[in-house]
Structure formats: C-alpha cells, structure tokens
Amino acid sequence: MDTINMHEAKTHLSKIIDRVAKGETVLIGKAGEPLAVLSPYRPRREPRKAGALKGRIWIAEDFDSVDETIARDFMGSQ
Image (cartoon, rainbow, N blue to C red; front, top):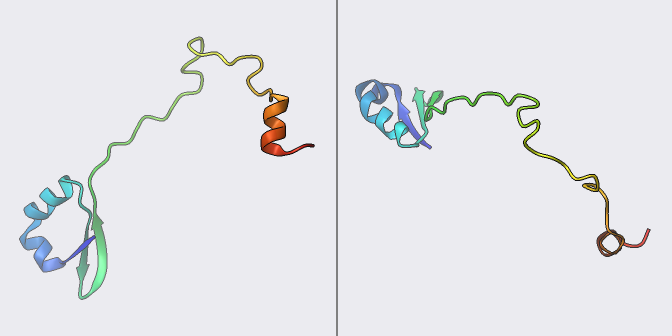
C-alpha cells in the first residue's frame, strides 16, 4: 500500500483516484501520521433471503448417513 502525504493528495487527486479505480489501495497521511485509506468501491450485495430456492433444490433422505467402511477408514474404529 502506497502512502501519500496530504499536500500531494490534494495536488494529484485525479491521478490517485485513477490508481484506486484500477484496484490499488492508497494511504493518505499528514505529518507522518496515517489519516485515511482510499480503496476501490465495491457495491454491497443484496442480503440473501431465506427460502429463495424453495422447490428448486432437494436434499436426499440419506444426506448425512455414513458408510461404515468410510467411517472406519477416516475416523478409526469406534
């Protein structure tokens, strides 16, 4: 992450925004102290709604059953 001082940021804002738009993150500081981070905008995704796939998928009755041979090989004899 590149660090840019406040004066340089004010002077070259358009160029800095172009860099950020290409995916770069830039730290802006003043007197050697970090003040702000510029990062690319990422739009929020819509929250998923419960039941949105109802009727479009199914889960087999034996979904969580375990084959005895596989259980013995991976979990040891119990």
